[in-house]
Image (cartoon, rainbow, N blue to C red):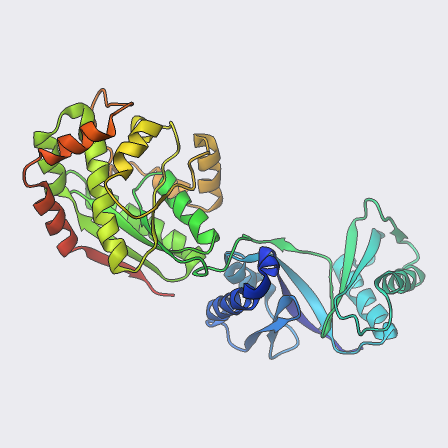
Length: 394
């Protein structure tokens, strides 16, 4: 009996990509290899509908390697397994027995065996393999029983180019490989919503760059530090991450001094979108991304969204549009941005807020009001000229 420990990497909707499937597989394999680069002696290879991570030694530290792979978009599950090249049924039975004894020790348990014969050249059908392995385990471990409906252990056998045996699959993100769906510019504030929006687009394969609008002295360095920490957390899913920190004070004061208070928030958001679009074009992005959720606040009513979005020509994606606040909070906690977002440091979106903002603005009225603000276009151009760039290398 010869085998070695490995990680079996599963992916989901990539397999439905038809003629483009190879491109998605290649992209995902590149990302896996980059994430594993800090570890010595590891290899990631494509394996007939799966990826396999092997070590130069017979064993490797699952606890260290799993965290590096579970946050990779495109992967749906990771299974610590044993793999063998010996393809006779006797070796499969012995390897399965070894695996299950190591997992359960001498304790009685119920189990079932589930075989997937992806390699159709293997001469024994899936059901027969499951029956043979199950019978062998029962004969060797007489205190254990088969339970096909509610087993304590489901022992999986996958017959591909190699034989893989495992009983556990660690759930991963799913989605598409990062960078396989174009590029987007995320308007990243210090709040709860926008980091979640960035995560969801990264999960759909969008290469996310971000812009933060900094308004000293009205916003503190702590507020900027909070956004940088959010960028660091998002980089755990994206790898490399680039954040533009745009000086927004002059633009904000220009609008504040000349605009009607009820229109202030909408005019500020229009200027943000214009700046974000200019940076997006510089970064060859295809869209803008915001954390808007329909109806959550006054600037996110349908009328307000229309009045704000007319400021730009680039598509504006809102992945949180149909989510309520609790759903967003739950996801923020899951991706570990929530505790950062609730730090008590204000961003530029929370200062100079009107007491009674418009909720059903007319787009043409907002555009007209913007046109009467003297010096606004110049302030926007100056803001775009000298942003600070914060980068997180992969």
